[in-house]
Image (cartoon, rainbow, N blue to C red; front, top):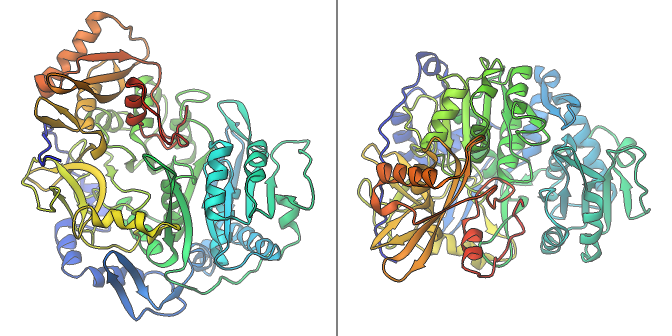
Length: 629
């Protein structure tokens, strides 16, 4: 592949941290903290690990046999112990751990002490079914507290959990159960979505019919009267837990003992089972939650993800609980029953840290700034963005709509990385659209296909040059597939994303390497063209693809969702093209623009451009098990 990827996006705005933000932050001076952490990464990670509790110490921080890593070698620990017992031994036992709000506004508030007791009962119930260290359990639940209880209960006894998002179809669920060879499935009768009742139990019935390893199915019944269960294979969640003791000792596990398998969609072929372990993952999620969100004792932390995705694993469940935080989690969509849903929750619960996605921000942008203005958002202190690169226009809107002076932590990471790798810290000056700089202890670069560092403003591959504690350890049952992450470019972990660094070393993600569009000898990242489209006042969301073209190699086709109240017309299409011409130049102007009501997205909110392209060119759609619609 040719080396250079053109960077056309020019963004000159810089936002300095406020004196208030600076005064509160754990890391006052990023530059010196970063230099120190890179000079001695093992010393840095070892010091972080000492903030947590270990049953026995490590003999070595890192054992690196390229491309295989072991962290905290010889140590024993348990992530659930650190999420619960560590706090229950202190005043935090009566602190609120979880505030849960259902789609119908039902509320449940659970303290650390109560969560600890529920997790112990669930761990004992798992043991009673004969589950032991290393067995796999599939959790297919809607966004309810029992999802978190089940995850922590598995972790407590060394059972490996595999959480599957409750929007997946029966074949997709069966696929994941079969690969993990799960003995138990934990599910619910129903989930709720925009007022609709989703029958989860029938999906599980179909999946389990083709999954011979499943011995039992536990069902959380949310509706009354409850559905009939067929004993002894099917058990009611409440009956399962009610007679269990609220005490269960946490297993002393090797730091490298697997914690979970999380399936992430392969671009082609079957989903990949990413494996994370107790020790290193615990250290990575703990410290990134603390430093990136400047998490303090009194904060109310609201991450909108679902624990079915890695963001939910790392930044709803494990990272915040390791820090003893109060977590708000809510079932349902951001615009149901109206577009004020999240703003209302922020006002009602005094949320101070709000972590969301660019896709959700662009969805709310469609409804305009009047919605957030109706609510008191003054408790907000730190904002976060995760998922796709956030375009400057959406960044600016989010900044404005929430009250101007709150820093936005634009975080870059993946299922495979386990925790945030590229991110601002609250004291770092911000440039809208840039994920800024690597987190402490993380060595990142932008390189060509031979691994050579590229000069400023030259697009190339985003890579991580050294191992880090929360990195995945393997792809379940497929070590060869794991090796490709480290063997594609010598001595680097390659993420599959393209990126450029500016003169200040800030990193700008430009889209997936697979989505690069080649126009008349220029290679363009999708994120820049989409960003220029969204900067038009009428455009809420955009996705672009390259189409084969006899003369220029590829032409650009754009798919656009308009903001509420905007009407499609030839004049509007021309005006959108003019905007791209002004922002990026002639080379990036789409030759075709389709106005569409929706875009194909994964259920975690990432636009699936390859699906648009396959559809446009009449090709096979590949693995679309993660698609929302």
